[in-house]
Image 1 (cartoon, rainbow, N blue to C red):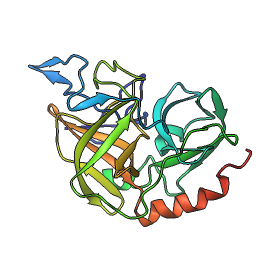
Image 2 (image 1 turned 30 degrees about the vertical axis):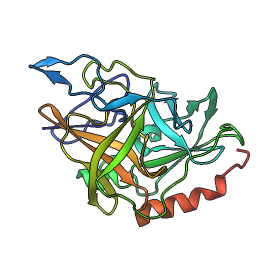
Image 3 (image 1 turned 120 degrees about the horizontal axis):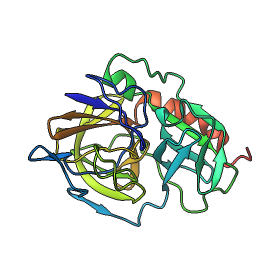
Image 4 (image 1 turned 90 degrees about the horizontal axis):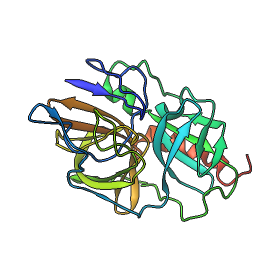
Length: 245
């Protein structure tokens, strides 16, 4: 069993965590078929031009992630996407105003402890994003699945397919009050998808954090935005909404 926190340009692995890379959320096929690396093929995932608020970003360290504009200037992503960054760029605009969840830590000793606080935001100039922002869930609507969206790769080993937005419905359930987890499945998160949303009924329920690989199946993890810890963080950052930074 291996657990990955992945970035677009490199994959690091260990028996539990990946040594602090960027993990992302797109929907990919199994990484191996008949003991060989699989072709770039999304299983139960489809290319989409929808969800315009879901946009790719890159840091000064060339770390590629997905994320969502939750206002015209506030970009929500995974904490590990910005933790070591000086700035983040999206839509041709850079921001060095990066805010991590106050309890974020890359030194967490369990998956649940790491994932539940793996949140961050980037504050951009007012009206950087001119479309309709994402809507966040105020209370959990999780039943048996989420719609995952991201712009990461379609193969965890070869890391091909980055930059194309894809979506897929993935069976999921609460792992803890702060973490949403999929069941082991031939589809899940892949490099470049970190920070992308898990959507239920057109609202964001979770933010992609990491994936555990067991043989050719994948267990994906999202921060639960309806947890008290997540809601307190998001409440605190409202002061940045549409301000000129």
